[in-house]
Length: 112
Length: 116
Image (tube, rainbow over all chains, first blue to last red; front, side, top):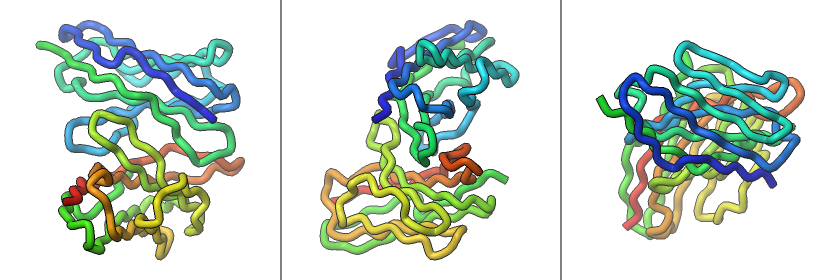
C-alpha cells in the first residue's frame, strides 16, 4: 500500500523567511496530493492541493510542486508570518480510492 | 460554505458506556469519512461511506459502529471502549469524482474523546 514520508518533523524560521516541507510517496499510481494545516485543538484545514497532471500550483504565499518521476512533492511558504505556525500534513491518494494516506506531520514555528 | 460540524466537542465516557458522535455537512458531498487522530500523529482512516453505503472499513474493532442515516449525516456509535481509544475523532466529507477516487476532503473540528 501507499506510504508517505514527510520531512522535517520540526521547522523553525524567522518571520519573513521561507519554509519548505518535503514529502515522498511510494505508490506511483497516486494522483492527488493535498496539504493540510492543523492548529492546536482544531481539525485539519486544506491549504492547497495538486493533481498528478500538474507540476506546480500557487496560491498567494503558498506553492506546491510535484515531481512524479521522483515521487516527491513539496510545500513552499514564502514571507512567513507568526500565524503560519501550526502542524502541516501532506497526504497522497492512491488512484481510484477514497483514501488519504497522511505523512507524519511537520511542526512549523515562525518567530517574530 | 465548506463547513463540517461535529458534536459533541468533548466527550468523557467510562468503559461500559454507550455514546455516539455526530457529524453533519450541507455541501452535497456524497462521501463521508471517520478518522482517528492520536496526539502528535497524523489522522488515520477508520471508515468511508460512499452514497450512504459503507465502502471502506480499515479493520476497525466492532466496538466502533458507523452509521450514515442520510447523505448529510454520519454517526459513530461507541460501546465498551478502552482507554487506548482516547483520541480526537475527525469527520470529513468530499465529492466523489466521476472516475472514482477522492476529491478534496473537508474536515470538521473533531470530537475529543476520553475513555476512563
